Length: 192
Image (tube, rainbow, N blue to C red):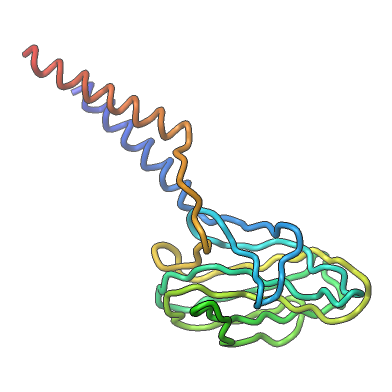
């Protein structure tokens, strides 16, 4: 009975660890993201919930950043919210494109504002590009966040590419301990 409760405890701890790793993740802009013809490819595991970066020097007309991500096709409303930090008089617009056969096909755009919101219903599964456009040539390089909200796993917002999965050290410890407990139980059962 006691050995069974040890195995049950390992399973509970393992499921808690797995549920924590399935939570949302943030993509941070690397360098300067391009526009919808050359978007930055998001990479990670799990649901993508936020993109952070800086818009670029608006005095040099670099007011556009675009990011490629995947959507699993879960039904329901999806919302994109872009905000400059700290709030400024610069206005943002969010443009959404479907990435098909190497081409960006325009779907919808938001009204310019800060923050700026774009809500759509029932996106089909596939790869998409979220492009952020900023107005004004004030010579600023303001940081921004793009919040992605909507249905979660298995069909919500996902990274465009997933790197090879590497188990967390704690997960390896749990599975090793679980295996040892099962071997112990089997040997104990054989002795009886």
